[in-house]
Length: 113
Image (cartoon, rainbow, N blue to C red; front, side, top):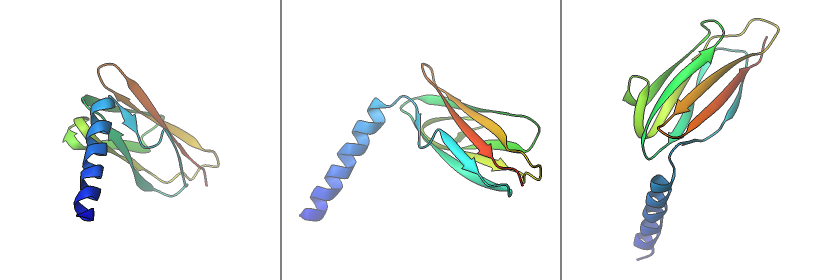
């Protein structure tokens, strides 16, 4: 009986969250080390959304998981891929997520080596 109640509580919380959030992310600022790598931005939405990337040079790229091309609907993931930064200075990229009525930006700062 307790297992059923716990499951029912989780299910109802999830439905309430999904229906009330047009567009949100798990983190709006990320700090990356100088080595090459990847990170994932979790996107919460109750509607269609699109992702774009702004970065100087070709050291970064994105792909959207759970969607078609650079867009998705509902819960999704933006995979951020970045090259090593051998310069002595940090660099920045901005992933912009846009739904019909809301825009959210995620700033990613990669330290220099």
